[in-house]
Image: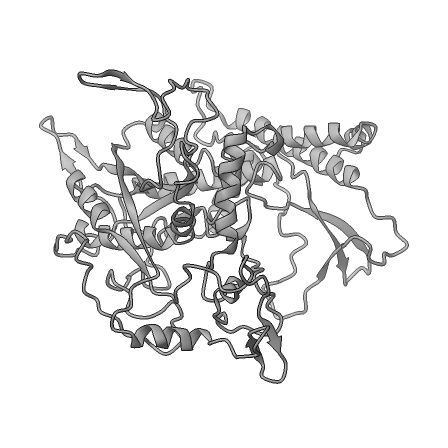
Length: 548
């Protein structure tokens, strides 16, 4: 560690050191751990990156995550060899669910017949390959194209929009009669909030990942091969989720549109149209009865039906309908991408991962006080529905609708589900933002991190510089002996030893000095390894320096 550099940084205020940490790609809110060496009997304090994926929480960690995802996307998009088969099969069941969401519960058989209001899917023979087909041009050049697909959800009501040209009518303004500019804060907010279907918008957001899975299943069967994908879920300006997907190989444009039109997901859950408890007509919530070991009505003491009982009642009703059906919207964007230019592919990958560090609730900006009243009201109303609707069979919100959640105990707080789907930050999208098929690259994110670190290691080794051992304080070893190092997180307010705990600023200063030393060594090594007549090094990877 450069002690002089660290001492100099200690003289500056914390906000200045934090800004310098962001500039150098150092985590601004490291998690402090005390590492005890069982061989020497000494200990030290080590700061571990927080690993946040949001820029609003930690810009360096969010950027490192985005660059890692960019590498993962690029590596699998146009590959021409089959990746190693995954440990588990990538195959998925038929497009209609035949049981409830719990695979371990009693299987409830449902009809696999498609809905009559859904388009039919074409049937083709399946090939086990995952790489795309090649095409030969008249000039003899061979191409292996892939796809960039964007899927959206349908409309929930008229929203403010830019003026558009209509043949015979000229420039048509927004439905509100106003010609909005491109920077108008009203764009994509409802024209009439009272008629906007917020409940369906919240339900579609809660079940959007299931709809994406269904679309990919249908696409594979209609494509004739096991198409692999790297997809990112993002919010539109109207706060409805949409999907950008890089798909390996190429499928006819009409087939993709046909699959999107025919794709739907049915939610076979108990009815949750209107709340029974915790509402204006009945503000009380169910209570836990210790004697009965179940939730009961607060007034009558009657037992609430369990999750399995509610599903049994649903299955026994021949006229039962799904509680909700999610469908894709009619707007679909399809682009063919050919890996004949690094700039072209890089631009597409950058666009795909552009907003990974932004939360759904930050679509209009992370300054809530600076939002336009229409934007704030739109977010509040959508969040009001996403907060009280059930997100899963285990969701505590089921108690509002008179049903005991699956596997509920006395620790469940009625109406307070811990899932992030109910948070204002996520607005119903509580799942993963990045959806990657198992055979995209055949690697885990950890293996991709190792690949990035190996680029740095080889560059330094070529220049005669030994890279710092990233596993020097590892808790595990290759042999069966007890671990040498024992890690214990340092929590605020806990009893500490006599040795002084470094301050947040001191931890940041040490990490910044280390990062500057690493970057200097890496840049010098690249210059030494660069051929005299070549301006581009084969190991030139500007983002790799932040991966070590």
